[in-house]
Length: 367
Image (tube, rainbow, N blue to C red; front, side):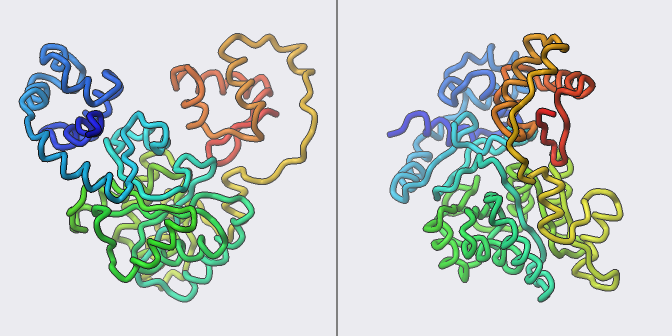
């Protein structure tokens, strides 16, 4: 029996403890087991927890019920990912409500250097299909991880085209891993797993794909990606929810424009008009906006450092940026042992000194 997993599963079932509270507790104690073993007086003094939630944790006794879930996880070789697991999608940790525990089947790197989602209507047009296929074909050279939701329409097209062009693709599900919804995509799901992709969910076995699970699922799609590409959507629906969530998480959102009379492009046109999405025409627009263009290799000049005296914090940032052509702000936050507000301040100072430049897509590089 995996004791740590037992407590992780239990944490997701404690009344009054949601994802936001679990994140606070995990940051405080480091492991789910330590959360349950902490004294009530310690728990209730933590900001955001209080007496009611502390009592819920200490009174929780349904540990036996978690053993069936562990049996399912072990039988089907599912990888559980707790908040502090090294394989947990770290971009989600910068969201205020990351899933406490994820269940994963697959081999794709959920922390790939480039992660994008393709989303859109279930009832796509031929134009939407053609543009999705063309964009993914052209993005092949950049090897992004492609995320979607395994639904009919644009989702399935994106997954299939990713496999065709040897791009890893992951489906985020609104149900447990004991089923595939829609059932017609069972073969596609298996092909994704076999093609260096995967299936990801925060829902336990026997969880049905109920309507209210989809917005919950959509926040994972929005949060684990650097950018969300909206191909076709009406003014309402799951794609609009995902796009708005991505905006709230400070992720880039792109939308493919359509005819003003086309209801299936009404959502895309609205996102562009309201400045919630950048208009894109092709894959090149995505590459340019995300700062993925290849750069000519050149010997980095040390001349600046002869005239600019860097402090210790600035040296840390510069050394990390010198290792790669460009680095996303999230990666800097994860790699530097510095507060995010300090990192933002240091980056601004380095920009003013013309040592660092900011790129589209919240990327930074050495000048």
